[in-house]
Image (cartoon, rainbow, N blue to C red; front, top):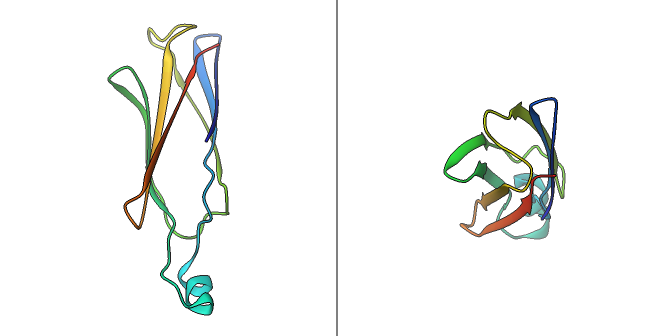
Length: 99
């Protein structure tokens, strides 16, 4: 997982790229396997949830997500932690420091 986070003008801007095949139901049926795609993603700074999203199978392979939030006390050097979970139950977590 690739994560970038930086603060500018009291706004935290983040870009997250999750490395995942995102196998849709149709593609899985053609391959004779079960569908598997990211179903949930959450980003936190400390205990504060700054972004949470439920997704579907209609997102591209290795999806990139950009979001921004008001900094409200988040400062340079704080750690952003992003986690995702897929349909099979597998999860991955990545972290980065705010620049």
